[in-house]
Image (cartoon, rainbow, N blue to C red):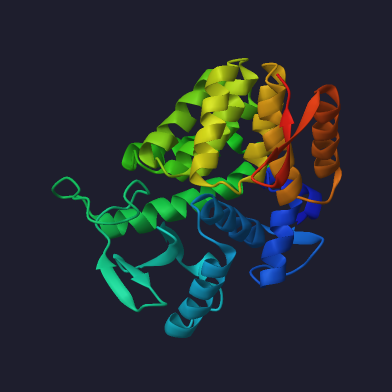
Length: 304
């Protein structure tokens, strides 16, 4: 069985170390220096839920409730978690179930665009069967990505999923990342844009789109994509970091300063945080600061 060290997990999933530690502290994953493939799949699901603006506290509460009402030992691996606003619902037998409230709604839509709710499919389509089939295909493709020499098979499966369900944002993102790593930036951009259209509230899709636009030196567009990700998830540390870098390159250091500072607050330890603080100090040192007093409170204002 494949095992992944902590550094590999952070690299593969592009996770901030601080976020992984937060999930460990909450009990969603065990603290470890080595992870199995199933644990990698669970971490990917947690990452995607977090990118949908769902708090760690809400995820923990929903997982605990799902264990109690379903008897599942590990809902994140045994079921399909769906972000519904600030809560987590679970797909079970063609329905969306919120185990906390015990409410249920028929699961018409199997794509992420509408959060699994009330979108009618074409006549003759079997939504329940397609859901199970595409989920199984998706997990198989994820596994194949990690097996040397089988990446093309994974790509073919993602492409088939998207033919079956054009609104499958996660498949579009994964296929886009494969193309990104192959330096097919135009192909990657197409997939990431497809994911943002399928799910306009999927912050990870906008973040990845920003990365590929940045790679193509299309900085104004990249900045817009990062800003969209942050509008959806203001605490998205990696988006703050990459946006700060982009603003540095467009010579907008004052805008970069705000995002360097935000990143350092969200991820206060480690080399990336040290770099962010160093960049913030450099920008501040290069600016002339004027001390002004307003309403009896002392403030700092950058002189023009």
